[in-house]
Image (cartoon, rainbow, N blue to C red; front, side, top):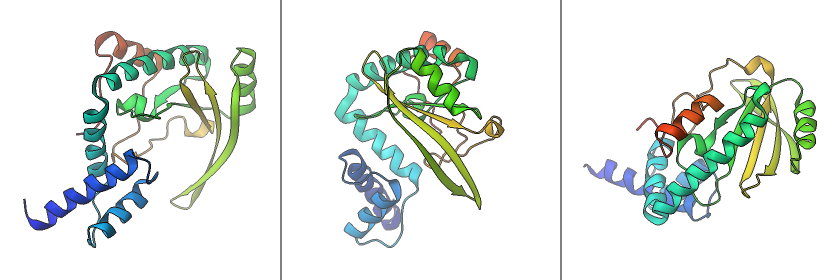
Length: 204
């Protein structure tokens, strides 16, 4: 390993530690702070940081992490079955299999009627703790999404994001791993739970 790649690895490890222990919440800020601490003028990729972060979580959370992941996936199936007519997709760290302490269940739906979904969940007995609209601009295009937050019966936090219907078949690139954000449908998730419940979906 040459000096640059050795330092790059150290920056990735430092950034991962900052993220895990809550000193930073965003990958970019964690990388910048780690590079400054180590006196470097270059940054590792998000993927390199994600790999080191996964190692930290595995070392510190180990078996409990695996058990929690399986439990969170089981909880996700229940929610997705409730929402099945809206074709929900499990995304985020519960899909990836890279959860850590504080991770929540991320589910995405493409639909132009977020209020309808909100009312549907309320009628189903779900207690919504918070809702918000967020907008992001990517490649000059502004995307709006509606977010709902609630807890499952097993006390897991869920973030349900509703994007516009026109995004149903849009391919989204993961800003951390660099691959396509495929996620899991309820049927795919059920199959994973049956065949390999702690399976990881990462490109490394």
